[in-house]
Length: 294
Image (cartoon, rainbow, N blue to C red; front, side, top):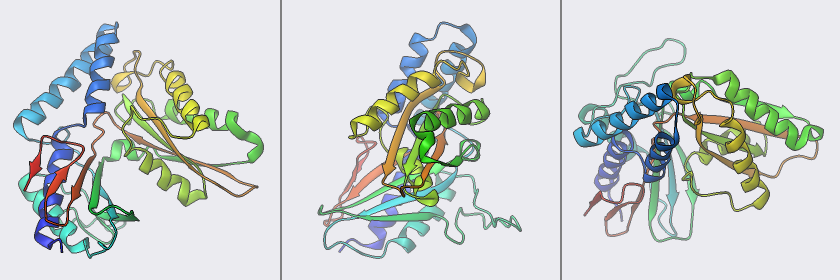
């Protein structure tokens, strides 16, 4: 049985990895954007971003002052369904103190701040299941600048693919430099209003160098990536070739009379971390493989 202490330790390590070091696919994309940019101002912004990332990793400090609210995805392996909520909450409280994380979670009306990033339904934990022999935990610290640019539309089926493209481009144009581009675009298509928004956020967990398995969706990902990068918004909204680093889309079947589409934007600090916890207590860090703890 995996103990609460191991789960708590994994949570602290996941959060530290997420806020202090970006996954390799994001680092690679940012370096490529810098190397290919020709305009001096956006190139300078990309250099500042890359320097910031290096300083954060070297000093084991958060790369952005907005360390977000914390969305977790827990995937239980076969015969491994256990209670994890208390351990994750306690891990988040400890991480808030020792990393440190800015305490961002507040009551929506009174704005009361407990000071430890926890509260009702926060952290928010999504549960999934697999036939593996380990528990996998992913965390996505989500800052407000990008999250505030989320968008949902209930299109009619007749609007189809052209309506989806129009909505996506209009959303990015409206967002401009507010979500701290270059960004990653998570899109959810189909399901219902709530399902599409959930899919949009889940899409951000997928590395940006991996296309959707569905060929039509993969083609749309590539097309939107190219189209958005012709808008000229660029790094921090100051122009240039790279407005987005990637476009990831997840989909679900939907009602014959409905076409929901949701967009969730992630800033250049595309923080995510994934770890697997094995039955013997070994914590295997997938997104940050250099960090392995017994």
